[in-house]
Length: 612
Image (cartoon, rainbow, N blue to C red; front, side):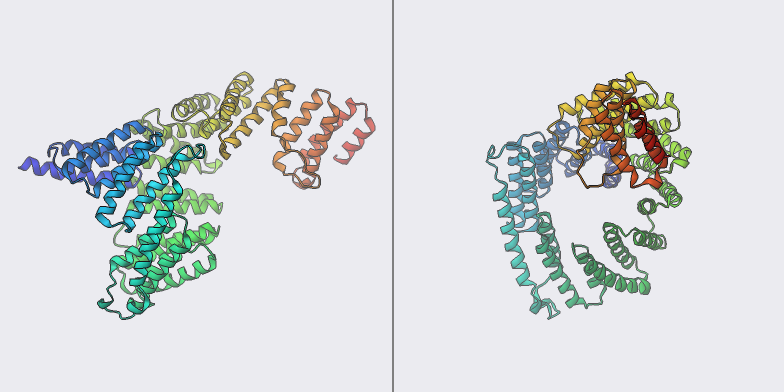
């Protein structure tokens, strides 16, 4: 009996710590804790619900990158749950929905459809056909259908997205009308229980609004939220804490105008501030903090970062004065504060805020956690170049943790290796930079398709590194590997992919130019250079490309083409003449050199005088 109680206590402790880790996105820690919980749960017997609960959590914490293995874990969890419950147990819904999603990822839509249909039937049986929980289950099925048919020829599959969406909207409208009739203002104004309005009704209004928002029906969602606000104001009073809290939630759903959302948030905050000052109750403080967070999000979306910073500082002060102090939550606040400082280019204060975040997270999670390594790496990424030593120390520390708890071949390990490699390249430590960049690329290639932007970015970084080191053979080899990727992925229309394709092609052109392979360099540059639009001022961002192609034509004695591009480069720089005198002089000298080679000495002399 004593052993059983000990096992139960350990199981509960491991499960709680695993859920906390999962909530904090510390997947490695969650897997570890749920694994320990599973070892204890197996002592309870196959027919104990705790075993089914644990297996479900193990599946949730699994790496979704390995879909087949994750699907097998969910299948085990499903079998365990079915063994200890009825076939209509609502606990089965989330397992079935996740399995349907994974089947879709594997293009096994028949199995996905079967699991999703069963989830919907269970929801209808337990909650009713129009209940928000049922509608959300149907919406998950809709998303799976949309994912499955994406990119496939029209009419190839009979799974109708439109019909299911219409059915969802019809049920949603029916439930909304019924609830709105019950919650009409005439009944609410009685202010007593005879109206029949319950807290559950108010919650359901919010749930239905969430369903409308998920379908992109924002106006309908806002109508329901405003009705809930009207109920709260009528029952509790317009200046009540309940009504102010509700008003803040509703204002967060306003898409436009921004001024109205801001006005409503400020009204709610003023009321909640009064309750906070009167009572110093933890719940009242939490309401005020939540409203301030919503206003901060609004300002952030409007690029009003000075106001964001002010609100973040106020939120931190409120939390630190609260009797309930959570160092993990505080680390997130300081992390957010660091971001606000960074946007405002206040880098010293950003670094200080990151240090605070690191201290709080270390006290909350310990220094050997995945989340802690992520924070160290993030802080290093955003350190000013002048604080390279601090950045290097944080990257080194993050790398040590990642290699220990995630393994030497994890994608996050590769990301930190890449950052460290670039740091050493910038600081002229090529013997340290090269092995790190090569290892980062090898690991990344093992995790992603060869046309993934993370692979392409590292190809560009390594190719550029070799170019800077004057190792043109190595640079050409790695960059041409990127071009093979480009051809293999011509159908992939990703903006990031196009960006890295262009970057790789440009550096390869520079490599060819350095090797005097002018025909190859010309081919690279020409495919990148946009046609000139008469009368339109061109951006300075294409200057180097224009000038490089001019040099290539010049070297091949194609003086007509070279002259056009030299003049184009000068035209771009003329707009910013005061900012780049040196650039103007350099281009003018090369242009004059070409004119003399073409026996146009007077024009060459006039050009040099003009830009002397």
